[in-house]
Amino acid sequence: MYNGKEITALIAAAGSGSRIGSAVPKQFLKIGGMTMLERSVQVFDDCEIIDEIYVVVPPAETESVRALLSEFSKVKRIVPGGSTRQESVGNGLSAIGERQMGTVHASRLVLIHDAARPYVSGEVIRRVTYGADRTGAAIPCVPVKDTIYAATCIEDDGESGTARSGEFLERALDRAALRSVQTPQGFDLNLILRAHEQARRDGFAGTDDGMLVKQLGHPVELILGSYENIKITTPDDLPKDAPEEDFRIGIGFDVHAFARGRKLILGGVEIPYEKGLLGHSDADVLTHAVMDAMLGALSLGDIGKQFPDTDESYEGISSMELLRRVQEMIAAHGWAAVG
Ligand code: CTP
Ligand code: MG
Image (cartoon, rainbow, N blue to C red; front, side):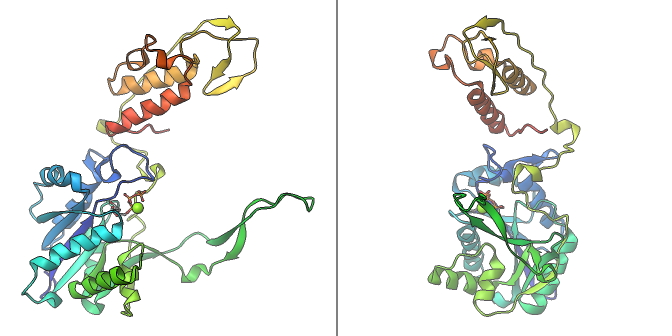
């Protein structure tokens, strides 16, 4: 509750996390022993001005998420998401809107947050809420630190004498006017319901909710977010200093005999040499040792168990393909290799 208004947090967690490449959607990956989704929900659950939390999840996960979040007292509903973020948020807003039917929407603010931003703080939540109370729409942003170029692609067959294919500088954008946009984004419930409805009717797709409100012609206030409030998008965004209980180490070694008439392949690279290594697959001894280390770290046996040489389908197979499968196996257990 803030300034007489009830505050609902809507957490978008229905994505598949394709860019991070893990077998489970990224919001279910653990950071320091807790899933990203739980971390995000926890910050809102702990924040005194938040009254209730709605969570949008992949339709198949509604039951598992209900169990995962059962300890958070403010979580009111788990809502099945859609195929885009905008659709998922729209589903969540409809659920909130339906529940509020007959009551005065104007007395409710909604803070829409991406589960993929687990480092959000109570401070940012409060600043967004104060802004949304003041103007009806408030978005956290941070000034851009890097110089940003618009890029252009040039295809050149080199006939002019110098080949110039690739990406080139089109123009530099005015950094002082650029902001990196974050969540939670705060709105009057009525306003954001109208903005989503209008976007649906117009077939307008935005990558955040502020855009939809701006599209309605309503001003959107930009307030200070936090540089810590990053979105986990690619594997580089995951913390490197995972705490000990989240860390596994494996050791692998392998031995293959040299033989004439075979290719010598190490780490997926063919090395020109008069002899190669004997084996059922391509006998890439280096990649085999790496796979054994990965499997051993998670007690999944070794490559002999996973890819037995009695199975003809592995005859002559590239060990890089086997490595890809091992990577999928460890991802399916919620783990990733870090360098
Ligand atoms: N999201 C959602 N429903 C979708 C797509 C995304 O609720 N259909 C959520 C994600 O779970 C995430 C947030 O929107 O918390 C931000 O989206 P993004 O970072 O793009 O996550 P994903 O779409 O899951 O990842 P990717 O784009 O790499 O597939
Ligand atoms: Mg996405």
